[in-house]
Image 1 (tube, rainbow, N blue to C red):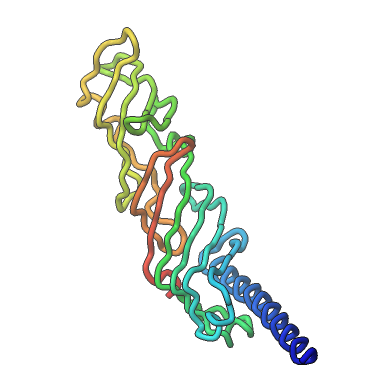
Image 2: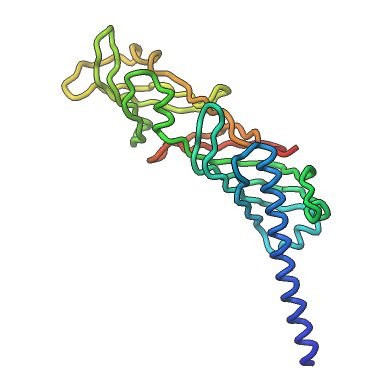
Amino acid sequence: MRALLTLIVVAAVALVVGDRVAVVLAQKAIAHRIATEYSLARPPQVAIRGIPFLTQAASGTYHEVDLQVGDWSDEKIAVHRLDVTLTDVSAPLSDLLHGRTANITAATATATALVPYDTVRGFAPAGVESISSGPDGLHVNGTFSVEGIPVPAMVVVTVAPTDRGIEVTPVSVRAAAGGPAIPLALLRRTLAFVVPLHRLPLGARLTTITPAPDGLQVTAVARNPLS
């Protein structure tokens, strides 16, 4: 009986160790595929969800894989805290064991990232001094030319995803204390601008944009991102 118990314990430990070793191999393979496919400066941190791992590995399908990319940039813009969740990842076990990554696919990719307000301001028209989140929306503060006269004001704007990027549109304007009233129509054209971020890595296109204390929190989604 004691020998049997010892054998069971040894077998259990071997399964756990094998499970964790296989996880590391799979995570490295997926990180390599993502970094190579999208020319990332360094491989992302990968976490495969679900225990036991070997059950998923045997089927070659992983229900959820989380990627932490961190900072990411292209030729136009940089973002922070880029995270990606892949679902229904297909990665044949034999390929993982031999370091082959070409056949790794995923059903969906959902990416989130932060676009700092300093980055947004870099694409804003002249006169914009600061951008911040307020209880009634995104606030754009600055001194704007109205009929050739510089007038300090705060403009509330909306943000929306478009094919060109994040579209910023004025919806209301408040003159500075003691300043003259400014018709919104006079600022609507000059203060409408686009931040050129319309997709994130893996071909994920923007779906939602939410003002946060330190920047615009964006979400993007892609179908079959690794095919």
